[in-house]
Amino acid sequence: MKKFTYTIKDALGIHARPAGNLAKLVKGLSGSVVTVDKGGRSADVTKLMKLMSLGIKCGDTVTFTVEGGDEEAAAKTVLDFMTENL
Picture 1 (cartoon, rainbow, N blue to C red):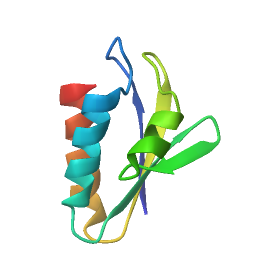
Picture 2: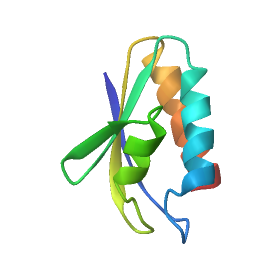
Picture 3: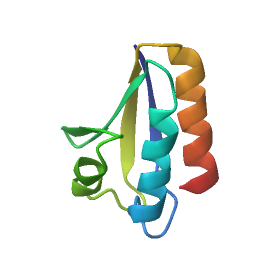
């Protein structure tokens, strides 16, 4: 299991377009399950409605957990996406 934290920098937080792109990215990572946690509530990032229900806004710090598959590479891919898009 690989974990990392990220602070959202996008003024709109995690909204529909980047959430959909993140879900699509993670679905393409073979054998990896990625969850995001905000304030004790968590969601599988491939479940778009659950991810959006966390209400992640600009300035929020969230924790990502990557399990299965090549965790190191999957975590780097997700972190790179977050850095470039959110």
